[in-house]
Image 1: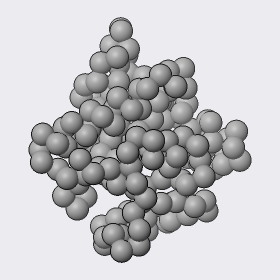
Image 2: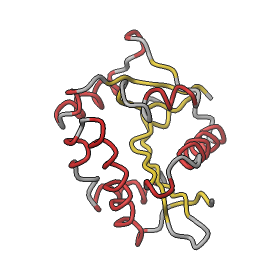
Image 3: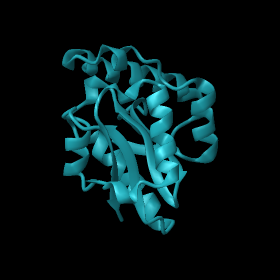
Image 4: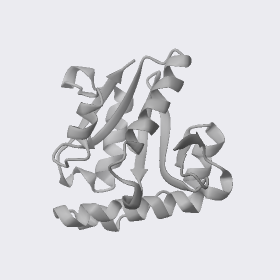
Length: 168
């Protein structure tokens, strides 16, 4: 599996991966997440131009997973990581997160952060296995709180969510 920067002509493939990956939420009683539309091409283009979008590509160089990140509080914040269900459970999400961690370390970025659902097995419990820890209330920065405010406005606060951090 090759991890590389996303190509501009692959942005619709990222949307397709997101839609397919989201279907597993339907199976656990979260159909609103399954039905949620992925980021727009304009938003994905912004990540591409910022150099903050990567794909895991298969042997024929077709993306099967992706990760996009933002710079938040001097850290790299995982905005989205999605693996197509046909390629799930092969460590591809871990590869993408490790790629981001290596990039962050090379840039002297102290940590990766993210927000996620607490009760979804492939969310908070998965990230905990990868070295992320839940941030206690005293470490919730204004920038992280703003991310959660936007998530709440999008309806994501219907289910328990947490901030997590992986120190590098």
